[in-house]
Amino acid sequence: MVDRYWVGFFLVFSCLVGALDASAGDSDPIYRTCVGQCEKSGCVGQRCFSHCNFSSDGVSFDGPWYKQEPLYLQWKQWDCQSDCRYYCMLDREREREALGHDPVKYHGKWPFRRVYGIQEPVSVAFSALNLAMHFHGWLSFFILLYYKLPLKQDKKAYYEYTSLWHIYGFLSLNSWFWSAVFHSRDVDLTEKLDYSSAVAFLGYSLIMSILRSFDVRDEAARVMVAAPLLAFLTAHILFINFYKLDYGWNMQVCVVMAVAQLLLWAIWAGVTGHPSRRKLWVVVIGGGLAMLLEIYDFPPYEGYMDAHALWHATTIPLTYIWWSFIRDDAEFRTSNLLKKAK
Image (cartoon, rainbow, N blue to C red; front, side, top):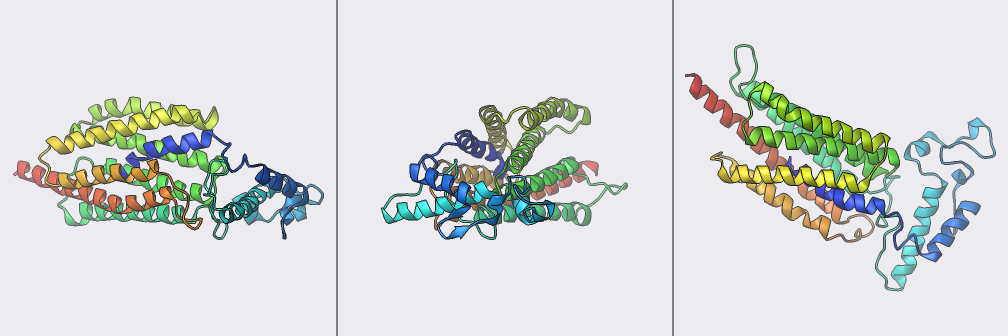
C-alpha cells in the first residue's frame, strides 16, 4: 500500500509538470522551426511521415476512407504532430549534446527514446513488474486464507479484513495497469485514466489505514467511516474527468490523503505490539527514501532510465514486503480469534 501512498507526492510533481506545457526545449526557436517545417512538409531531414497527410483522428485530408491511417497508429495516436515533435526533439538533442549542453524537457517531459512505439519503455516495464508483484501478493494472500489457515463452518475466513484487502488488491492491479498504459503513451485519455485510478487507489488506501489502525470491525462503523470518503473520491474523480483536470486541486487532494495515511501507519507501527511491525516500518521508511528520486529529478540515461523510472523500480521490493505484512496480519488476527474461541 505504501508504494502507492507516495503516488500522492508523485502527482505533485507530475501535476506541476503537466500544468506547465511550455518547457525549455519546446521554447527553443530551432526546435519550433523544425516542427513547423515538418508539419508542412511531412519530413524531418531524410525521414518523412506518410501519415502527415492525415488529421489527428486518422482521417485523410485528401483521400477516401480506405486510405485512412493504420489502426495501430490510430491507437497509439502517433499522428503527424507527435512524430514531428519526436524526431525534431531527437535531432535538437543531438545538436545540444555535441555542444556540451545538458538535456532539457520538451512539453513537460524529458527526451525519451521510443521502443516499438512505447514512449517510456523502462517505466512501462517497471509498472508491469509492480502489477505482477501486486498480483503475486494478492494471490498468495488468497491462498493463505482459503487453503492454509482454518476456516469457519461456512467456509469463510476468520480474518475480519479479508474482503477489504481483496478490493485493495483489485484497485492496486487497476492502478498499475493504467500506469503502464500511461507511460506507454501520454494522451488525454490515458492521463485521466492513470490519475483517476491512482486517486481511487490512494483514497481507498486511506480508508484501509483508518479501519486497520483503529481496528474498526463493526460493519456499520466501517460504512460511517468509508461513506464520506468514498463520496468525496467519487465527486473528485468525476470533476477531473468531466469538468476540469485541475492539476493544483488534484495535487492538494493527493497530498492530504498521502500524508494522512502515512502518519496513521507510522503512528500505529510505533504503538502497536504487532509481531510484523518492523516490516511496516521498512515499507514506510523505504517509501520515504524512494521519494528522493522524485525530488531529485534527472534526465533519462541514454534516453530510457530517469528518476521516475527508478522510483518505480524501488516500489517493487516494497510491494513484496507490504503484502508479506498483510499475510502476517491475517495469520496474527486469525490466531488471536481462534484462541478466544477456545
